[in-house]
Amino acid sequence: MAAAVPEICGFSCCLVLLRSLRGNWKIHSQYGTPGPFLRWVINHATRSWITYTSMKYCSSCATEVARNIPKGDTRERWVCGNCGVVHYQNPKIVVGCIPERDGKILLCKRAIEPRRGFWTAPAGFMELGESIAEGAARETLEEACAKVEIGHLFASVDVVYAGQLHLFFKAKLLSDFAAGDESLDVKLFEVDDIPWNDLAFTSNRFALEKYIGDAGRDNGVHMCAIKKKRESDPI
Image 1 (tube, rainbow, N blue to C red):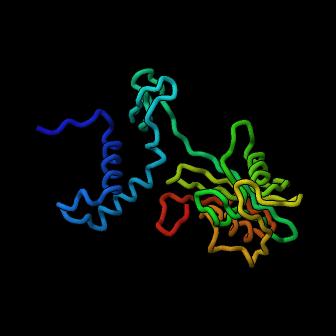
Image 2: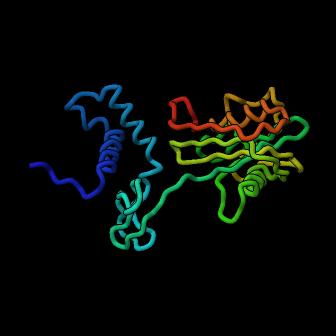
Image 3: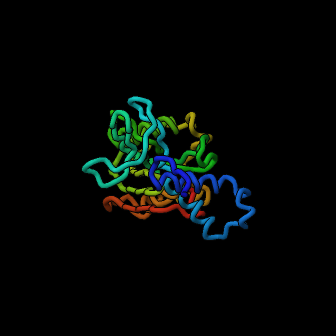
């Protein structure tokens, strides 16, 4: 007779098992060391799907939720079996800009994780009640204590595996600048001096490359999709 299985979807069961495997290889010593393929499966699954498996309790009634396909839907969602609320999880929007003055580009050295100590364009998660342009200007003020004149949107990066959309504007630096609470340092870089090997995020690299390639021209919105994380990618 088969062992009883908890009443949660098979997808969640697999992830629970994979995470336990990832956290404790020694429990399999009696069966031998997992091969490279199994290691890849475990690492890939637990890393790629963490965005979609992070909910446990209903925010309306505090009952445990489970993954189900709601009536009329085609995707699994977190659904409360008690009150019936469907908890939709959608991509988060990150907004930022590339501030420039006299041909130099303003970058911030991160004071927080992830990627503490690495350089990034001022950017962060969009807040309710603001436009994407307002969010980019706010993030610049928070991270670099700088005021900017937001230009046009020029780069869009879908970080699919992280459930994020990164949007970048061109911007003109209007004020002095200093390190905000989330920055260790803030500096204007000549294009030839940009610390490419110490950039925090892949989306930053894409935005900077396209910004420099545009050379002041409006070439529309450059788009990129990062569907899965490579071992060498910061994000």
